[in-house]
Length: 171
Image (cartoon, rainbow, N blue to C red):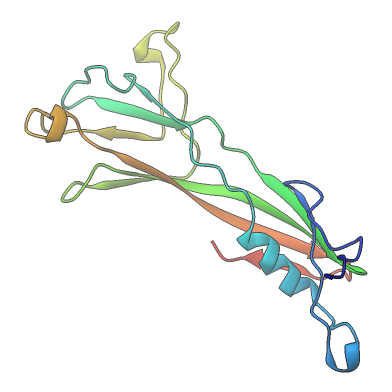
Protein backbone atom coordinates (compact mmCIF):
# COMPACT_ATOMS: atom_id res chain seq x y z
CA UNK A 1 0.00 0.00 0.00
CA UNK A 2 1.05 3.57 -0.63
CA UNK A 3 2.06 5.77 2.27
CA UNK A 4 -0.10 8.87 2.64
CA UNK A 5 1.56 12.21 2.10
CA UNK A 6 2.40 14.13 5.24
CA UNK A 7 -0.36 16.65 5.93
CA UNK A 8 1.80 19.67 5.03
CA UNK A 9 2.72 18.42 1.53
CA UNK A 10 -0.12 19.65 -0.64
CA UNK A 11 -1.48 22.48 -2.69
CA UNK A 12 -3.91 24.44 -0.54
CA UNK A 13 -5.20 26.71 -3.29
CA UNK A 14 -4.20 28.27 -6.57
CA UNK A 15 -2.08 30.80 -4.65
CA UNK A 16 -0.90 28.80 -1.62
CA UNK A 17 1.20 25.72 -2.13
CA UNK A 18 3.24 23.58 0.24
CA UNK A 19 6.26 21.88 -1.33
CA UNK A 20 7.84 18.91 0.39
CA UNK A 21 11.59 18.54 0.10
CA UNK A 22 13.03 15.20 -0.93
CA UNK A 23 14.47 13.01 1.81
CA UNK A 24 18.21 13.32 2.28
CA UNK A 25 20.66 10.58 3.23
CA UNK A 26 19.67 8.37 6.14
CA UNK A 27 16.02 9.39 5.75
CA UNK A 28 16.66 12.95 6.90
CA UNK A 29 14.80 15.69 5.12
CA UNK A 30 16.85 17.71 2.68
CA UNK A 31 16.96 21.43 3.52
CA UNK A 32 15.27 23.63 0.93
CA UNK A 33 16.45 27.20 0.55
CA UNK A 34 14.02 30.09 0.20
CA UNK A 35 15.64 30.88 -3.18
CA UNK A 36 14.87 27.34 -4.43
CA UNK A 37 11.27 27.62 -3.24
CA UNK A 38 10.94 31.04 -4.90
CA UNK A 39 12.04 29.64 -8.27
CA UNK A 40 9.63 26.71 -7.90
CA UNK A 41 6.71 29.01 -7.11
CA UNK A 42 7.71 31.45 -9.87
CA UNK A 43 7.59 28.64 -12.44
CA UNK A 44 4.06 27.75 -11.27
CA UNK A 45 2.56 31.22 -10.99
CA UNK A 46 -0.82 31.36 -12.79
CA UNK A 47 0.12 34.17 -15.18
CA UNK A 48 -3.03 35.12 -17.11
CA UNK A 49 -3.37 35.50 -20.85
CA UNK A 50 -3.65 39.23 -21.56
CA UNK A 51 -7.26 40.45 -21.88
CA UNK A 52 -6.78 42.91 -24.75
CA UNK A 53 -9.17 45.63 -25.85
CA UNK A 54 -8.79 47.92 -28.86
CA UNK A 55 -10.27 51.07 -30.28
CA UNK A 56 -11.65 50.78 -32.83
CA UNK A 57 -12.89 47.42 -31.49
CA UNK A 58 -11.53 44.26 -33.08
CA UNK A 59 -13.40 43.06 -36.14
CA UNK A 60 -14.51 46.64 -36.83
CA UNK A 61 -13.01 48.77 -39.55
CA UNK A 62 -9.95 50.75 -38.60
CA UNK A 63 -8.43 53.43 -40.77
CA UNK A 64 -5.00 53.30 -42.37
CA UNK A 65 -2.72 55.94 -40.89
CA UNK A 66 -4.71 56.46 -37.68
CA UNK A 67 -3.65 54.96 -34.35
CA UNK A 68 -5.30 51.73 -33.21
CA UNK A 69 -5.43 51.88 -29.39
CA UNK A 70 -4.48 48.80 -27.37
CA UNK A 71 -4.93 48.23 -23.64
CA UNK A 72 -4.88 45.25 -21.27
CA UNK A 73 -7.72 45.01 -18.75
CA UNK A 74 -6.20 42.37 -16.44
CA UNK A 75 -2.92 44.23 -15.74
CA UNK A 76 -2.42 43.64 -12.02
CA UNK A 77 0.11 41.96 -9.73
CA UNK A 78 -0.30 38.42 -8.44
CA UNK A 79 1.08 37.03 -5.21
CA UNK A 80 1.53 33.49 -3.99
CA UNK A 81 3.08 31.80 -0.99
CA UNK A 82 4.75 28.41 -0.79
CA UNK A 83 6.25 26.55 2.18
CA UNK A 84 8.40 23.49 2.77
CA UNK A 85 8.40 22.51 6.43
CA UNK A 86 9.66 25.60 8.28
CA UNK A 87 10.82 27.55 5.19
CA UNK A 88 8.44 29.78 3.23
CA UNK A 89 8.56 32.37 0.48
CA UNK A 90 6.12 34.86 -0.90
CA UNK A 91 6.40 35.57 -4.63
CA UNK A 92 4.88 38.60 -6.35
CA UNK A 93 4.56 38.75 -10.14
CA UNK A 94 4.01 42.11 -11.83
CA UNK A 95 3.34 42.93 -15.48
CA UNK A 96 6.28 44.97 -16.78
CA UNK A 97 5.58 45.84 -20.41
CA UNK A 98 3.33 45.06 -23.36
CA UNK A 99 4.41 44.25 -26.92
CA UNK A 100 2.25 44.66 -30.00
CA UNK A 101 3.43 42.58 -32.97
CA UNK A 102 1.48 42.98 -36.21
CA UNK A 103 3.41 40.23 -37.97
CA UNK A 104 6.52 39.58 -40.05
CA UNK A 105 8.08 42.65 -41.60
CA UNK A 106 5.98 45.06 -39.57
CA UNK A 107 7.37 47.19 -36.74
CA UNK A 108 6.92 45.98 -33.16
CA UNK A 109 5.61 48.44 -30.56
CA UNK A 110 6.61 48.17 -26.89
CA UNK A 111 4.56 49.88 -24.21
CA UNK A 112 5.73 50.45 -20.63
CA UNK A 113 2.27 49.97 -19.16
CA UNK A 114 -1.19 48.54 -19.84
CA UNK A 115 -2.23 51.24 -22.31
CA UNK A 116 -5.10 53.67 -21.83
CA UNK A 117 -8.72 52.66 -22.35
CA UNK A 118 -10.49 54.66 -25.02
CA UNK A 119 -13.53 56.46 -23.64
CA UNK A 120 -16.32 56.64 -26.25
CA UNK A 121 -18.10 59.30 -24.18
CA UNK A 122 -15.25 61.81 -24.63
CA UNK A 123 -14.16 63.59 -27.81
CA UNK A 124 -11.29 61.79 -29.55
CA UNK A 125 -9.23 65.01 -29.70
CA UNK A 126 -9.18 65.19 -25.87
CA UNK A 127 -7.75 61.68 -25.41
CA UNK A 128 -4.20 60.32 -25.53
CA UNK A 129 -2.68 56.88 -25.24
CA UNK A 130 0.86 55.68 -24.75
CA UNK A 131 0.13 52.38 -26.48
CA UNK A 132 -1.11 52.35 -30.06
CA UNK A 133 -0.25 50.85 -33.42
CA UNK A 134 -0.61 52.71 -36.70
CA UNK A 135 -1.15 50.52 -39.75
CA UNK A 136 0.38 52.02 -42.88
CA UNK A 137 -1.32 49.71 -45.37
CA UNK A 138 -4.77 48.29 -45.84
CA UNK A 139 -5.42 44.74 -44.64
CA UNK A 140 -7.14 43.97 -47.95
CA UNK A 141 -4.30 41.63 -49.01
CA UNK A 142 -3.90 39.95 -45.60
CA UNK A 143 -5.39 36.48 -44.95
CA UNK A 144 -9.05 37.00 -44.08
CA UNK A 145 -8.55 40.67 -45.03
CA UNK A 146 -7.44 41.35 -41.44
CA UNK A 147 -4.17 41.78 -39.61
CA UNK A 148 -3.37 39.10 -37.04
CA UNK A 149 -1.84 41.05 -34.18
CA UNK A 150 -0.12 39.36 -31.23
CA UNK A 151 -0.12 41.21 -27.92
CA UNK A 152 2.13 39.85 -25.20
CA UNK A 153 2.90 40.98 -21.67
CA UNK A 154 6.31 40.55 -20.05
CA UNK A 155 6.13 39.71 -16.34
CA UNK A 156 8.79 40.21 -13.70
CA UNK A 157 8.79 39.05 -10.13
CA UNK A 158 10.21 39.47 -6.67
CA UNK A 159 10.34 37.21 -3.64
CA UNK A 160 10.98 37.34 0.07
CA UNK A 161 11.71 34.41 2.33
CA UNK A 162 11.19 33.39 5.92
CA UNK A 163 14.86 34.04 6.69
CA UNK A 164 14.73 37.66 5.46
CA UNK A 165 16.26 36.86 2.08
CA UNK A 166 14.68 37.99 -1.18
CA UNK A 167 15.34 39.30 -4.62
CA UNK A 168 14.25 39.63 -8.23
CA UNK A 169 13.09 36.74 -10.38
CA UNK A 170 13.91 36.38 -14.08
CA UNK A 171 11.25 37.59 -16.54
